[in-house]
Amino acid sequence: MEDFSFDVFVSYAHTDIEFARQMVNWIRLSGFRVWFDEEQLVPGSRFRAGLQQGLRESQHLVTILTSSYTRRPWTQRELDLFDLTAEHTDRRILAITIGQADLGPLDQVLLVHQRIPWQRTDFEGNGFWLLYCGLTNQRPGPRSEWETKGQQLIGKTREDADSACYAEIPSFVVLDSIALDRYVESNDFGSQSKDIQGLISGCLFDRDWQSSFTQLQCQIKDIDDSLIREHLVLPWAVGNAERSAVVSLAMIPQWYGHYAVWPFVDMGCQDTARWFLSTLHLTHPEASEVWFSWVVSEEIWPLLPVAANRINVKDLRDHLLQISRVALDADISFHDAEEDYNYGVMITPWNHFHLCWLALKLKDQNSALAHAEALCESGLRGESRAGRFITRLTNWPCFKPIRVSKLAGRIELARTALGLEKLALNSERKRRIEEIWSFVRAGIAEK
Image (tube, rainbow, N blue to C red):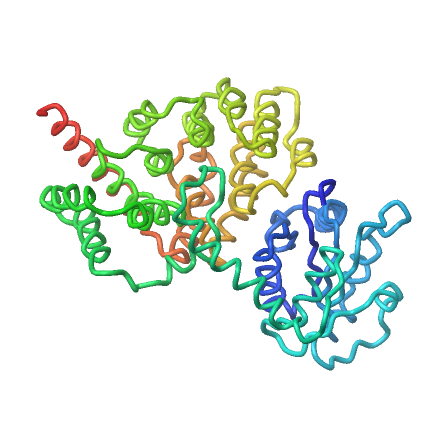
């Protein structure tokens, strides 16, 4: 699948969107990159052109075959646009047939490709294993094993997500959505975690916060790395940067790392971010994307390629170098830049965020607003991985031209959907973080 930005294009009728969303999630859990229209089509953009690009950049087409699908005008066009010519023998159309639906006069292309039966609108191990085999070009094996193998594809991913989110991973790795959703929804913290949560809240909300912060400093010294990540990494990843920032400050001076920097970069706490960045050399492999994001937040454009070139993962490095070159090219239009953009390198919220600031840099405010709205829309759908990008949209000065006049309401709605604090409290939280930072500096000076 090396020649395509996406592994799978999911085609469906709008009436089946809830099942399509589930299917997209299951396919992603199995390690595939998925093009899904509600995530990829920018509001206000040309609908047909966006579909053509998605189909062109996707190796396989998965259709959700229901009675509604066969009556939907655009489904035939998607099938027509999907290139199955002789030179593309590595592409497949995989039709998932739901229940006993009246499929009417099926398109010829669906008649000549084996269909995958799916009896109900929730997860089925049998059907999913057949789909996986179609996408990976392997024989299904004994029928008695299909259900187990299909279930294992999802179960293994859940186990991997639980372990991966607490591992020492580079900053460019996007934390798995299952781990983040579980963090957002879970109230099952141990007693020590609940104590820490209470102290963090005291630091942010109480007028006399110094006592809570001093206690937090003592507790942080004695907890293990998994709890550090529970209170620093996961809150940051879902947009609660202020909670992560408190933990980062409480850990001074015994622990530094790239995750400790992110909250201050995301919140636009510039002085604190600079201090934390001074502890991470630009050549540090896990700090490279932090530096890139900080350069964007500070609008120090000539440093973009320098920061991008330090990233030690080739796909991401090449992608950010390309963005950097475009950002520094005074003659290129954003439309042309977007045409060449590779959506398959990162997740959808990440893409919309970077295209938003790039559009502003290239003086295309309408496109910037469209991508910002698409980012907010992913938050409204409850996509927890959008949280940290919504936080940047809220705080970074470069987004002010679109934020102050047109976008504030959408940001507020997205923040509410993601369980983030109201915009009206944002400046107050930033001031509190700055107060805590001054308190920490004073303590360091005394020592």
